[in-house]
Structure formats: C-alpha cells, structure tokens
Length: 173
Length: 435
Image (cartoon, rainbow over all chains, first blue to last red; front, side, top):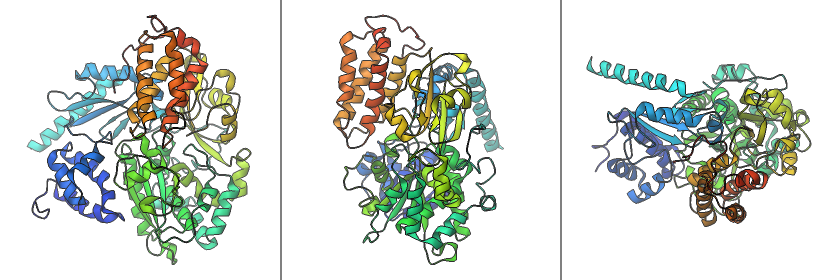
C-alpha cells in the first residue's frame, strides 16, 4: 500500500500524521499520539488502522499492538459516539461516584464497557481522570463534567442525544 | 470548568495568575511573564542551579527531591543531546493541581522548561500530558505556538544565540507512566514499562541522553523562584522545604479545591479551616495526606505541618499533595479495596511482586468486603503487602502496598468486623470495582 494513494484517514489527519513523524528526534515517538488521534477519527484501532500506523512509523503491526494494548484509552472495538467515562476512584467515590455510575447504567441500559443498541453511547467505569477536587467527575469523550450527583445524569444524557440529533439534521440539510 | 477556590491563608505564588486570562501570551507578559527566563539567559547555568538550590524547592511530583541538586547531576559535557522532560501525567488519585496549571498558566510551564534547559544545557524540552487532558493539551499547544511566534522558543530565543525547542506529547491512559523511567519509555513510543536504575536519567535518559525530569508543578514554580529570588521563596516555607505547595483537598470536606499554602502548613487547620471541616458536620475517620499511595493518618495524627519531613516523621508521605478526607461513615475495607483495585488495574505486570501482589490483595479484600474474610486473611494481607515493598523496578509496587499496610494496621478492628459472613456495617455497595 502506498500512503500517497491510499489512506484511511481524512486529508487533514493524514497531513497531521505526516508532520507528526517529523516532530520528534525519533519517528517512533509519534506512535502513541498517532494511535489516539486515529482512534478519535475512526472510533477504534481496527486492523486497517494498525496496519497503516505501522507503515507510517516503520515498525511491525505486532509492535504497534504491543504498545497499544498497554494504554487504557486505546481500544480495539468500537465504542459509542459518546463514550461516557465515570471516575469511581477514591475522591469521586467518597462523594457518590457509584450512585452516578449506577444511574448511568439505568439511564442507558448498559453496564461497564457496554454500548447502546443505537451506537450512540458507551459506558465505562474508569480510574482517576484528574478532577478529584471537583468530584464526582466524568468525561464524555474528552469533555469533563464535574461536581455531579445522580440527579444530573438524565440531563447529561439528554444533552448529548440532542447534540446527536442536531448533527444528524445538519447532515441531512 | 473546574472551580477555583480561595482562602485568606493562601500564599499565591504559583497560582498568582490563575483566573486572569494568562493562557493568552500578552496577558502572561503583562503579568510579568518571561522576565525570569530573560534573567536566566543573562545570568547563566551555574547561577540558575545555585538559585534553585538556595530556594529549597523540592520535587512536587511526590518524591520531594531537591530540584537544584537534580539539575546539578546532569553532566556539563555530553556526546548525546540533553533533554528536559516535564511530567504532566498527573494520575495519582486525589491529585488535580497540574490540571489547573495547564488550564490557567500554560506559559509558566513553558518558561520553567526554558529555564531548566538553560540550566542543564539542553536544547529540547518535552511537555507530556496525560491522554485524558486533551483540552489542556490544546491549550498547551496554542501557548507553545504563541511562544514560537514571539521568538521565545526556536533558534534564537529572546534574540540571543541560545536555542530551545518545546515538543508537546500526549499519553493514552496509564498511571504507571507518571514514573520517570516509564515516562521516558512512553515518550519514545513504547509500553510504559519502567527501566532499572542506575543508570539514572540525569546520565542516561530520553533517547539515551542526559535528561532532567520534573513534575509540571515544579517546572511552573521555577520562574516564580527566579522572579522573587531564592531567599524570598525559601522563606515562605518551612525548614528544608522551600515555598508553597498546591494542596488538593478532596473527598468528605466541606470546601474541596486546590489551595496554595506554605509548606509546613498544619494539616488539621487545612482540613478544618481552609477546607471548612468534614462535610455535613460528621466526624473524621482518616486522612490520606498525599495522594492514594500514601498511608492514611488517623485524626490523632493530623496535628502536623505539611512538608516532606514532618509528614514522613508521622509515618506517611507528603506525596503529590492530594489530601483526601474520609468521614466516619465510610467503610475502610471498601476504601482499601477501591485503592488496591486501582493499583491492580494499573500495574504494568513487569515485576512479579507487583503484578501478583496487587491481584491477590484485590482478591482478598474483595472477599473481605463481601463478608467472607477469615481471621488469618488479615495477617495474610499484611504479609503480602510487606513482601511487595522494595522488590520492584518502580515504586508502583510500594505505592500499592503502603496504603494497604496503613489501613490494616490502623483499622484492624474494622477488618475484624467483616469476618465470617458478617455484613459490612457501612454497606452501600456489595459489588465493587468491576474494572
């Protein structure tokens, strides 16, 4: 496969990757960011993504998988459009993170690492996200929501549903 | 947006520009920014290192190693390029101070990195942020681009002959990478498995070159030390503990938040006056003084100054400055289980005592919390944890063992109350830690 003629990624991301491999003293340093940005666009690290990243860096696919499997944010299966990550670590737990997590399970009808049937949401219980003083805190994709209680959950879910709907309408318009 | 808090006892040095729009370079300059870097450029490396030594600044990541001394270990001559690596992997549960630094004052990180580079003779600095901090990485990247545009970074910084580059780097979810040698592995595009030491990073570090690795808070403090003078900075803190610290109060406290207080500030006062006391007027059961890896303190043990030496003397560690307050309605067995579940999840598996130890501790504590503990398990937990200590490449094994030992030793009675099928006296969640 020649990268000039074939890439999985949008022209913008492909250009970004071209720059990324030049940014570091060693090409391989681009690997972890590249995997994360690829996942952001494609949704997960598919076999094709791994193959292209391996080729761009100049290492084997096995080597890419070996590194990717270490990092908890990288995944090999699709998540929902909105990946809800509820921190239940100590600071958040003390302020009711499990009530928040339980309410998300009820509201979305899925458990840890589950994906809703419409593919809109996925849910994860995650380790500390660095918002301890503003807990309980969650991240939806990269967006933080803090100082939560179970009562906020329905509103957060409705907010993202509305966002998806608005995007859908914009796409059809 | 994380809430900013304030208290009259605070001494705002590192947080001086918070909430004032200093992420914009013009505003940063207006507030005195980049003057320290210019001064360092004029004074030279030996002067910078001596100032840092005199300031008493100690590493804010948790180990408390004197910053000036660390910088002085880097050889002056090196065949390989030298590097500065800023550790913004902030992942210690209870800790969110760097979050605010990147959000409110990204240029202080850039300026501190430039100064560290001048001190050790490095031409390249890396600023590494944990993957979850994407919006902060974007703020950081904008700040770096702005600094390049002004000529504060690049081939001739501040119009001088000196050259300095900053490269931002993102992680992708790994607590372990906060350990310095694992961090270097991650920057090099590998699994974040720790390296054996020696050689230390100051001699053989990133890409094999001499490397100084500092916590983001340490680096953000550096320009302030230079600006106010080492002696004035040292005078703010306690003996051998210069300056201030960003303490993160979280958990069952009335007013949680990140407060900048002088080193040596009394812990009891911090909880009851700065933090407004235990939430809902409840009693205090325990305090985790410096992030979840530090052994807990009992209410009778908190009348101490919060600096590296005094907390050490009390049998714990100042660690990352994340103070987690636990009220008397909390089940310590559940808390211990949640803590060890974290370490079990984060252990990279490289060293057997850590990989197996965290797993068995989690299993034992899960059984305990479910009410099926046996009397001998309490000693077994202690035995397991003691045998993890000091037997791993990196401190993650110790970090998992230390708090567990603290809980078992200080709350043995509560563990005994969970024996032989007795229900947890505090039970809220029977099923825990599904990660």
